[in-house]
Length: 232
Length: 253
Image (cartoon, helix red, strand yellow):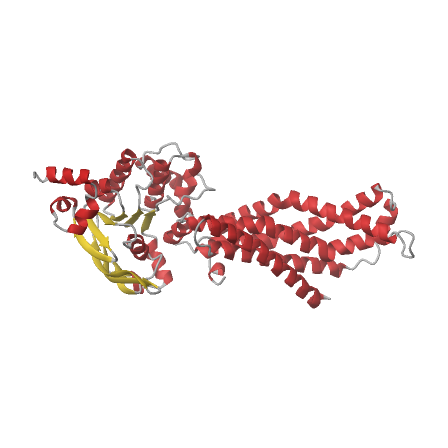
């Protein structure tokens, strides 16, 4: 990690690599994040609406619950768990493959600080793009909840909107951003580490890729707990 | 010139190199030969600094490479070109981008100067016009030549080739060998080639070092190979009865 934050040989090359990673992480993950978040919001809305029917709690609470659930927990945590599977395994496999094909040795011999060139742009790109993906996920989750709950006739659009506008706390958005930054760092650093230090053949590369996902998921859930304690 | 002085390398209890001292001369193709497990690849990795010796020194001309800091080693590495066994081309880059990479990373040349230099190197390895192809779109022999082009793009003083002929047919192997030899002579490069290929030994072996079980067991040139009585060398070079008959015929027996 220390060598990954060393001074770049040429800033423009690192910038170019960071842009490429931002594209791969951001554009490459947008569809899956959109689908998952929309369904998360939809299911959350339908299930809460079902539980609130005939009770003492007003139905407009569905909008409020979906909004806060998405912002505080589902958008940052589930999105990053999904990204650990998609982006993390991809990073581990890419760097591990480069190690096995001697491409990292080739970079070393050229005089490139391989840890910095291969890892730093990925971490920076993830820190910039993943919070944006999480914000999009929260937004689409709320939209998904609106569509699902109004389409099934459980509540009206007006009730849902009223819930969305009730008890809003901007601090929860801050929590979401903090979580997404922490999770982004965790999933990229663990995945890059697993790939960078892979040894052996294709079986070890597969294991490194799996470890990247499993360890990132566990670390994200632990970090979620810690951040929740620290920020509430 | 590169000089190795009493190089030893151990991995745990296993001593892979047991004190190798040799000189690789400038302007010559220096070949490292030996059976699998003899320590050739480890020795090559020690020479380029991918591994650290347990003891001993490696000198690049008047500079003790093993005593340098990482930053100082980088300065030497800027003068090194290396061709890897599997070519080690970057899959996500085109042929041109692969060759241009060291120029992009370490020089302030203009885009036109870089492209001119890349085209010169491509022409030198007879791959003109392949700029926009990806490594997966060219043959194994062409990948080796792209690897050579990338290795020489910064005019290196030292060129290392790890099994340059592995996986190639004999005809293509000769093309690669001749290319490496010609580039070595043209630019007075200190070239070190790690090879199993007997054609290479007999074609371009201007200085040959035979490693056996971690020791340097013989050193000479391709003419001396035929006449040497060193049994380890003869067993390695003329391994088959066919080659033994050829040797006998060449010596007039």
